[in-house]
Every structure is written in structure tokens, then in C-alpha cells.
Image (cartoon, rainbow, N blue to C red; front, side, top):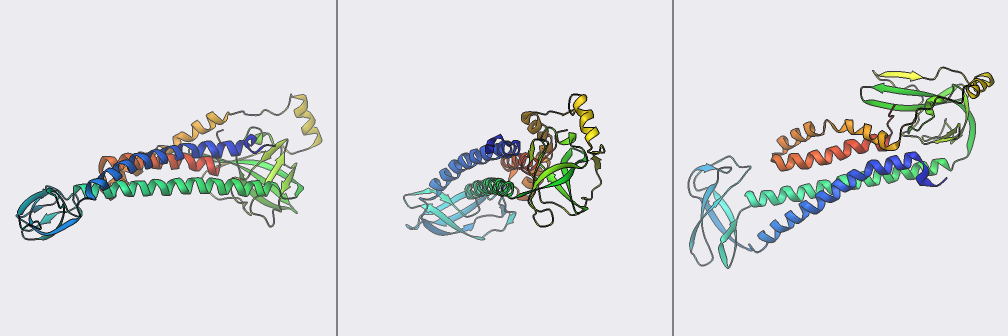
Length: 320
């Protein structure tokens, strides 16, 4: 089967797409603004020793007296957003344009701080983009490799974990009376698997961490590493209870086949959008701690929302 026909592949690709678009947009927009400030500051190659003329606070602005290379006196008003009370005669290094002393700046002033914030935003967006793309690609590659391992026929059953908005599907593989719990990417037909249904399991449950399972014409990819015991949690577990027997299979055939809940991938991903609701709250905390203001809040909200949407897609969610 072609790789793109795997529902898990499409789910991973579509979940990382908003992250890529948001990060690339932020990198371009913030990069352009940061470059504009850097170009404004770059001509200020001359330096002078300045002193605060009167007591004040950096956030309200300070009058700094200094002399250029021609001993001409200047007083420049500069705002330092992250500076509190400053006393008179405090020394400040001034950077100015040799041919235009009116263009004077200092480290930590409003323009310098804005440039640093923009550069940090670009760096953070690049970091998020790299992590999202690399992790998604690595997880895809590992599952392609796992599917190529030799297969053995073993009984499996289905289970689902529920806690709040979180839903996750599991397949339990039994080998020599030992159970292995495998979190899997959801697809229609999982809940119809009878307890003990024979399945082709690629990999050895006793050795391999990733198991690809073929059952009832489904190729099910693992959403995480197998576990030797049932995962603990305060949520609710739902497990298939109808045992696999010839009579049970024939009964389902007489009933017109299993009742399969079909959820389109678009609807599946739309359900994951609910998980981004904490993004503005987390962004508010971030902007407060970082003192980045409304701009920082907007950037953090966009990045956190893209990450919170990407996580359930790449690590597997259940829309039922």
C-alpha cells in the first residue's frame, strides 16, 4: 500500500501542517521587522560616555547628556522598558551615527529591546518548527521500518482510554499468555475487533517497542511504544468483551458485518482543535513572565496553539 493511503500518515502530515505554516509566517514577519531595526542600528558605530542628567525611571524615559567626537554636547531622551529607578550621573554608553548625532541609542533602550524580542521570537519559531518537523519525520520513518519486520499471528483485542477530552485507542497483543499494550492511531473498525481476533503482528512483543498490527484488513500503526502492563490513569477504560469464535464471526456476517463507526479525517482533526483552548492562558503567563506585552502574547498564543494541535495528531487521538 502506498504510504499516503495510511490514515496515520495523513493524520501526522495534516496535524503538523498548521505548525509549519504558523512558524514560517512568524519567521518571515518577525525576521523582516528585526532586520529593519538592525539596519536602523547598524550605522551607529561611534560611541560616547553619557550620564543620566536627572533622576528618573527607565520605563518613563531618561535624559542622557553626552558629547560627540567633536566635543559638541547633546542631551538624548531614551526609554528603557525593563529598567526601574535610575539616579542622576549614572553612566550610560551611547551609540550614535557619526554624521548624524541625533540618531543615538543605548543598549537596553526601547529600540534595542524591541530588536532583541523580535530576534528571540524568530529563534523560538525556528526551534518549534525544527522540533515539529524532525519529530514527525522520525516517527514516520520508525513506523515504516517497523512495518517491514517479519510478522507472526497472535490474538489481539481492542480497548479505549477516556479522560475528559482525551481519547486514545489501544490494541492488546497476547503472546504466550503475556499481554502487551500498544497505543495505536485510530481508524474506523478498531472498536469492531473481537477479543482474541487473530492478527499479524510485525515485530516481537517481547523484544520490539513498536508493533505494527494487521487485523481485519486494517494495518494499524502504533502511536507509541508498547507497554508490558495496563497503563494507569484516573480515566475510564472501555474494552471489547465479545470473544472471537466462529459462531461470533458468523453472527456478525448474518447481521451485515460489524457496526463500524466512521469518522472522516477532517472531522477527526477538527475534534483535536478543542485541545488548543489552554493556549491563550499559557501565552498570557508567558508574556507576563517574559514582559513581552501584547505582541509577545499574540506570538506565544499562535505557537502554543499550533503545538497543542500537533501533539494529538502526531501521538494519536481517538475521535469517538
